[in-house]
Image (cartoon, rainbow, N blue to C red; front, side, top):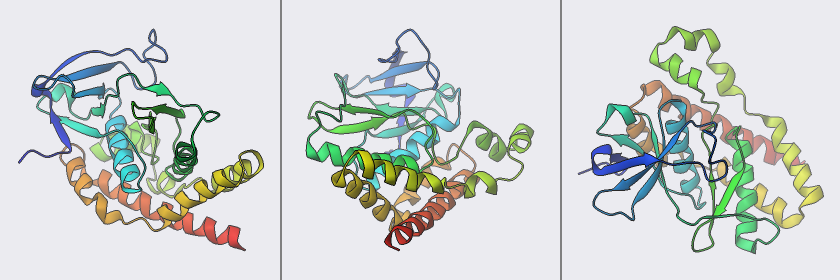
Length: 256
């Protein structure tokens, strides 16, 4: 039975895909492609190539965590069947997506926005805040490649490349950096500028993450292990455990 965490490059055709926000530029993730299923033209994925090996694993794990937490997000898969696309991310393409506006948002999407923003803090994201609406008006977030403190040098380190050790002499340093100050910074900002509904949504995600059941990610870790060293999935697992503790610490602090 095929692994649902993967698509096969042999089943798709690939063509260049300019970024809709800056079509004349390559972007931080490098040149992207659009993969279209040979059997079903309606099945399409935006491909972020393996120029940066951390993109695929971070996008993949971000989707798994986000979906497990009950937020709406596009499916993300890894790619088999071609060494040229190994360690590339396939993100389900949403045709005619519209840019999300908080000012005109309905209540459900308004709350989801601040839940996503909480996750931005929790998962140590360091990228853009790109939110869109699909054809049914559901909000989703794109560009999650910089998260979990997993960087290109992290992959080099786990691959045994000496450059990885040069840039990360102590792997526990990024692993333990939870960015705790940002929890309070965003809490105070949303309290001051966005109102109680926003604050409640923000805190609800922190609460939910503090109770996160990591066992739901074991299947995803098994998929990662087929393309990356097993040290990477162990890193994600420990990263999430530490962030759970950080969420509990913050919730206890604001109760005092």
